[in-house]
Image 1 (cartoon, rainbow, N blue to C red):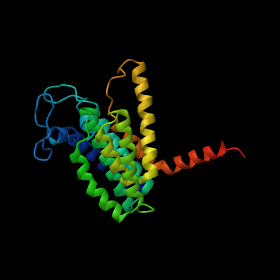
Image 2 (image 1 turned 135 degrees about the horizontal axis):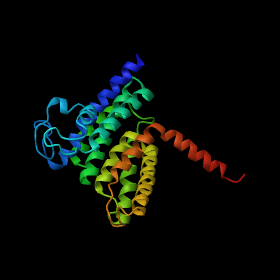
Image 3 (image 1 turned 90 degrees about the horizontal axis):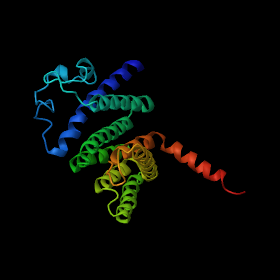
Image 4 (image 1 turned 120 degrees about the horizontal axis):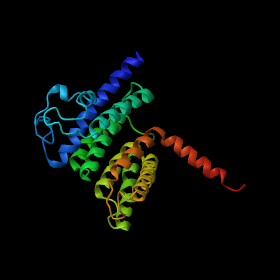
Length: 256
């Protein structure tokens, strides 16, 4: 039964991942993703249902449009796979309870924001406003312990990231601030801090690597949302362990 539900969960995640690709690419452009049919970005041909099967359509079509034979971006099946595996990972670690809905919402927001920021370097307000009431309801039904940690998480993100933006004179964007406030509301203060620190570490490592191979310069703007979302998901699942490890490391270095 566990294997059955694991397969179902992965399939649902990959289907949602395909949809999140569309949302992340269309919302910043103001394109209706409900009424407008999916189409090839190159030849504008409408795609049939069998061209929209997550992962399999890309493999069967050998990564090319059936109509114009132009290569399809590898980002589509990657996002579908990642969403499927993240949904599966959440189910395996949390099981069937309401918190599973919370983490699936968090994964959904993360994937949409990642797609949008990678493509347009933009975190749409519409996306954040859509998820805000969902997370509000979720944290009322399934509150943190203590419940007011949700408020501290959001306010903490506002203060800390706001000060960084002021001090760096725009080194971070206001979209990152609003995203971290929403994530802080879901995670709580401590896990929000861990998520942010992990994001900084990931961003620094990747940026250093790109500078080393001369893919970017010091003046190149690099989207920060992918690192925030990665840090957030790691913090959600392992934030407590990271906190215990860090405090234990600090205590070991204290003089007797």
